[in-house]
Length: 496
Image 1 (cartoon, helix red, strand yellow):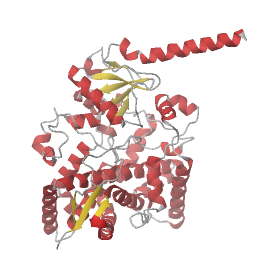
Image 2 (tube, rainbow, N blue to C red):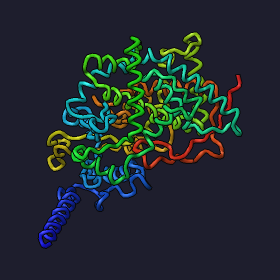
Image 3 (cartoon, rainbow, N blue to C red):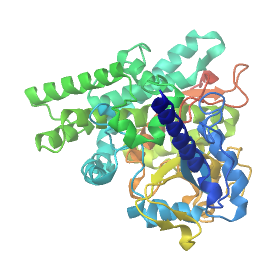
Image 4 (cartoon, rainbow, N blue to C red):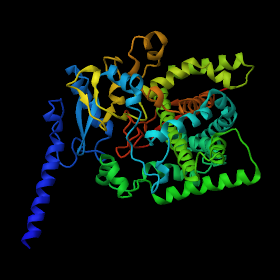
């Protein structure tokens, strides 16, 4: 009995020492930080009353004036570097990328196969996979997929008109409709499937897409443990994605691959490239499913939210809608009335509108990187980063920094005219990241957003209504920036 008590006391003493050591890390190094608490560190309110950007942004605002390259942050018991200096952000993302190529996100290909995708994986597997997959996102491939996406955009406008005419006062919830559009686009381009989400909101593909973002397998404590101790979590064979979601994507990928291989179907799309890699022995079926899943996940919620945010801002500023329509009509006239890939590329003001939407509402409001070796930030040895240490770059905070963007809460597309962009540092706009590990699907995301805006603005006027919130609230439980409630706008057909 005494031995058991002694063992218990020793265990408690070691645990106390471990926790105290971890939570005093930044104090011992004399790095600016907010005092942490056990067990959440600096994550008080995380996923309940606060979005992650509501935790990082105040810290960025508080410490950026110190002149230090970074501050300290505690993700539960894990000491993390919070980047404050844009020059350091540039070095991390671009100049010293070789030391910071890993994101440090949890992945467990054996037990949780859909986490083994390009966005999450690190180490020697990431670079060759990125190189092999990059050709499918070239401008040539975008041009080839353009007619498919534009056809879905036309259907979006048709469904929008039907819903508006059948609704009270033409008031529609925009975010859900945009999600149905993006699920149909990606179902076509990535899986070769006619998903019919625009006509049928309960279509399985659209429903499972929403669930992939909203359904959490664990509570926030276990999720925090997985992110804080990923190597231990892998040894414990912990999973993050629900089994039925995994089974769904594994099934549709398996069925698609089997049909194409058995019938010799060749399509110039994302899935075809993955099948060719499988036939060369470069990818397994679970790995194909993982890459297909991230193509869907990265393009579904992010583009849908960006479209909803853009329409919300346009509804509040009708003069911007007028300017966009004038640009659309001029571009169409120059191309014989045909909406082509080249016509889309000439919509320069629309590019500014999308850029400003992504500044104000960056769908991924922070970036993460891991240092491979000892690194002195900006050559200052006091501000060293240890091997294996995580860094956060607070994208939302940077995008709303009044020193970079005066009146940051105003929507001003002209901020992204060439002369104004030239006055800002390189790392001041990061909705797609930067450097060799930027978002591989950036061209595709911009294309499906531009196409939807083109078809919608040609036919409809969007305006605020009594159900329009004065300020958008975000889902605290989602690391991405997504509306917590519906975005309601009045939709009126334009007179010919």
